Length: 154
Picture 1 (cartoon, one colour):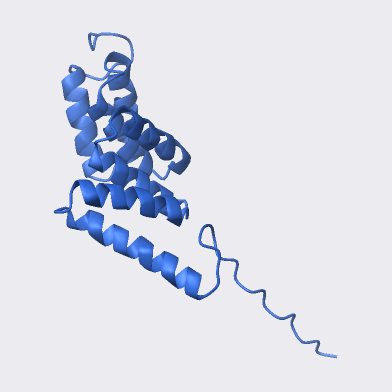
Picture 2 (cartoon, rainbow, N blue to C red):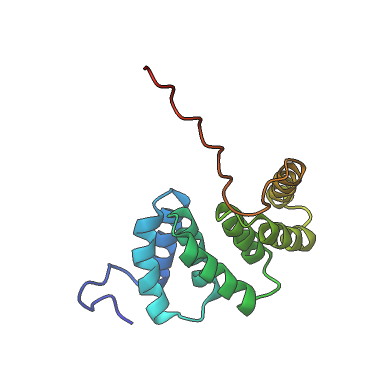
């Protein structure tokens, strides 16, 4: 597809992908998503583009969409350690700690040299252990105890 179509950014698909990657890396995930959607029109099967989209969705805090995107990646490429890590991180953000642990463990086994995978797995396991020891639900938010009613000034 040529960039000459109405509303298309300058450059070709590769340049759009490169700029979108730079935007994600610099913290501007929402802007990157605009370019990524353009790239996906030309390259809908590209796992690199799908991964970048999942990362951008996660960074932009579109967690339900990021979850679907990382799930799609793990289905397409079950041997992609980063897809499992991203899926685990998304489950973690959604406070689905058991599922996060499973995905982090898979990523850690696939790439044991990745320290960030190992640290994330340790943190998820520590969260699960702390919740279990405190007799709290393993998943979801912790409801704070309600405060006692204010004293009457009568």
